[in-house]
Picture 1: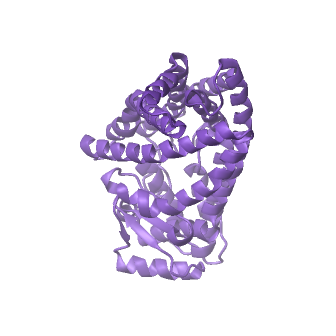
Picture 2: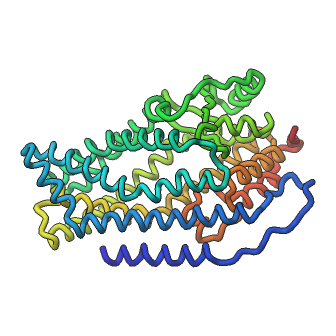
Picture 3: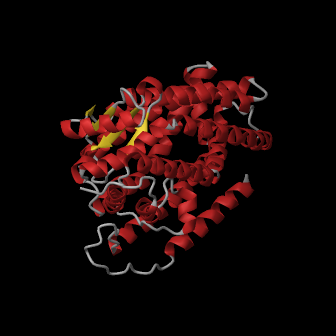
Length: 410
């Protein structure tokens, strides 16, 4: 475990060194170039802060787990629970609930800074603190409602099964599929309002585009994301009966119809290519590796630290630390797969729509609205970018010509 922690520390040091490197100021070019992302000092500063916060946040979480391990907090919480009941499953649930609350409190300063202060500082949100706290409370409640029973079931498997890593992995499969199905209709509406697209003209254009893509009866929704942010986005989520394409109202307000069609062609590519299912499959395969390696590390740690079994609630911070570190170290692999899938969706959109220039200007608007560096350092790109950088996507959008007469923008 110490080797893994040293590896994480090494990654963090490299990341901070990379982020701290001075970057050349962007060229001053004519405003006539509508495909150029307007780089500003504010954009670079915001990008660096977000990248530093990513690595600091991971280090902070590891520090919280180490504090809980050092203080024996989980064992003390377990002892409190055993004064109320002797049922192991209930004791596990009580202990997990207390640990979730404690870690949330210890992590709140960083959560507040990154989730509320930074977007306000860079004019990326008009959300009031009260509204942000309401969303935070809802998210915490949802997290608690899921983590407590699922964690208790995991501990039960770890107590009763010798190859508990296999049981956890097999249990993960139906859980993540179920979660993907219910998220759009149960969890997402807790935070925002989703409704069918209001723009009748755009809706018909999207229906025609979906028909050309082979999507019949596709579900396209708009969501009041402006409640939380000024950035632009669209995405596909859900599977089976809940699969849908979602557009933020901020995107609809800032983009032309052709730009929306180009973006939606990308999302339809995810839909047609079954990328949600493929992503789940890759995630489940990655979980198999994490569970197996984590099992071997945790079992050795249990023997050294004098825990009763790996399923002892007192082991939770140690097991959580192991799995968290392993998940962090495998992040680049998931990011690389995601970037590949996003590039394939770009190709799908260009072949479906032929809207090269609208796609390029849409990418520019996405970059400028989020105030993120369109050309990050390669280390940052490979470690944490789930999409190809905008500096790569714009030239590709302009140069890829699947049609002899591609459409131009509005």
